[in-house]
Image (cartoon, rainbow, N blue to C red):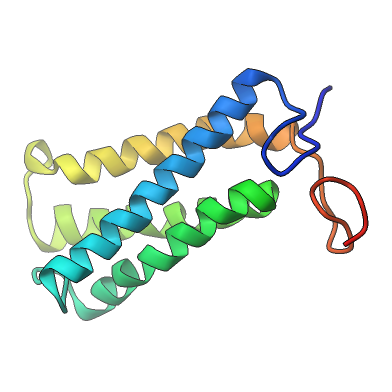
Length: 146
């Protein structure tokens, strides 16, 4: 099985490089979206949500940027952190949007887009993982010493 041997996905088939870079772009978009919401709306960026949810979503600006960066330089670490982020973000959105705010599912477009991102990630992450060389803490993603 061919594996990614460079941080940019250079050793992987084109399909895997596409999946990896699509994931990078999705998390980069998330980072920009959360940063924009905070800059445009101030605090709290989502007034209908609770303070803990607002703090988490505000923190997602830099956290999503970190995931995008990790996907490039430490792909497997990025996949793990990305899965953790989405694993918290989607249920929190479900609680805040569908539960607490009482938005009808038919009117919760942003929530369903996030669910689609989770679905995409659940499908793409295993394929990327299988084709990504494991980089231990003492090695770079390219395989050489630090």
